[in-house]
Length: 125
Image 1 (tube, rainbow, N blue to C red):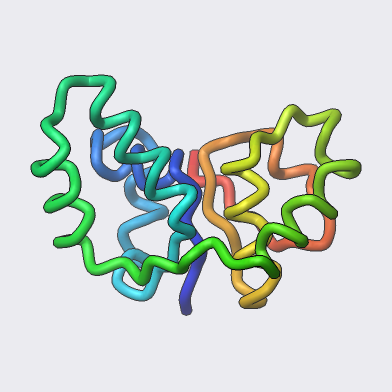
Image 2 (image 1 turned 90 degrees about the vertical axis):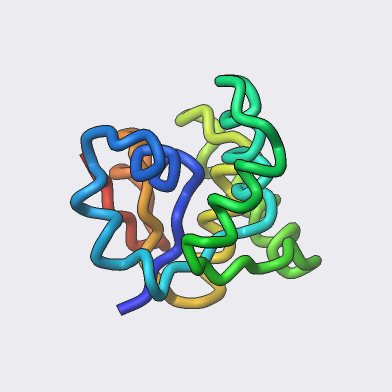
């Protein structure tokens, strides 16, 4: 099975937080949007990880990184009215848009995603 990872899911794995056990089994075949990769790299920078080290770490994980295409932008925008009340960011909606397009579950640590329709979501913790 493949999955689309949200930044929160990958950060849980990298930081060895609760939820790692849910991410590990799907990691080998997982996909992420470039938007979510940017989020992960930014968070790693915030904690002082040098960019080259963070980029190498992401590369070694073997994820399939999907470019944020126009179709994803359109899907993310269409998700805005139904997710605004949950406070979902553009990055969140980029992940969901990719999951929708690929017909894959989205993995996230964000509990508010459990209320979403139209996308299969796996809450990792």
